[in-house]
Length: 489
Ligand SMILES: Nc1ncnc2c1ncn2[C@@H]1O[C@H](COP(=O)(O)OP(=O)(O)O)[C@@H](O)[C@H]1O
Ligand SMILES: O=P(O)(O)OC[C@H](O)CO
Image: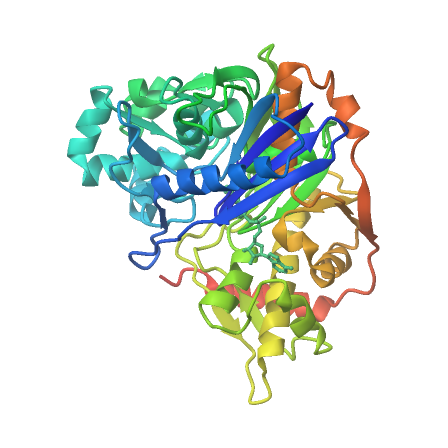
């Protein structure tokens, strides 16, 4: 028996067929376009996300031994999507989590004295990252659509809700608690949409999805909409929470970092809602079918792998992202170059939407290899900044870091990370623990697996990176450069 897992990420969609023993039987992947209509704006075409989902699933299913028994969905979080409830067509592009256009709305709400109450209810902060102010922006810039949403004809949601809606032929409009907890509209303690927050952000509650547990049957795929398949959709979670699950971080204190477009460090805090005033977010990790919630503290870094992608696509310095490793290894250090990849502002622990990227320390001797190496170092520094907040202000212990995601394939980056943290970094055989986590949730949801403990036994170590010598002088340069990147736009 197998499970089909769909990971609709920021760069593209991955589909895995996962066997009962946790092995990946087959996979498919399809990139989709990124739209940057104005500086600071990042958009996706929902139809293209759906087409990429179908294509990735087709490839994965073609390599699988039989028909899967259920489907799990995981997704880039916070991205605001709208679609017509009857036709499922999207009337406009989605506003992506990285989009900074709502910085003025956040400032307005802050000036209005709302920040403390929003943080108290949601565990989040007033930052353009989250869905809430993206909806507010739409209400102000697309009033007709907002009228349609209020009348129940247009659905509002995140990428998980959109995909499940498409898979079920429009029969289900749902999201899970982990995704809901990223919207600024979810009351963490009440475990429900907050009417107070919906009013503050001008969001019609009736247009929002029903919140369901992260596993258990949430709907069935419609064969005419989804590749002829009639399967239960039995797992849904935001991608970072799914990765925490896929890494087997089931116990309080377990920590993982996923290196994708951005990097997200999550520590399981069990049944406790732990709050941080040092730049970490409090979030739902997952919700069991019984309703019981597991929470996490999160450090969200917006641009890590995307900086490598920018070297490739924006500057043409690399042919492929994996090439960054050999190019960086061709020099012993970054030659004094420091790159702060604040290309979409800064997230944890700084939270400055007006920060912009900075490259300092250039000389006539600087080569592309130095800049590429400085980019990998920047990723390790950014994660160190977040882990230092976890172990310092938040008083948590991080004895090892479990790493996953596309950029975790980079051995040099992983070694830099272990050195910078002075902590071992462990990478599992399956780097794509996000999709694996969605498969685990879906399989638990249908009884294919009986407990998380059973799943934990399927975790296999690929490589452990032991900490070596760390360059504190380079880190000091990094901290100075970060200060320069702040308050730029
Ligand atoms: N070997 C590598 N070294 C450095 N970066 C990489 C490597 N492979 C992929 N990446 C980066 O990782 C990102 C893709 O990882 P993935 O986990 O698929 O991201 P997402 O889920 O955000 O779409 C891209 O931004 C890419 O530039
Ligand atoms: O698509 P990813 O893997 O970069 O993850 C995006 C996050 O969910 C944003 O919060």
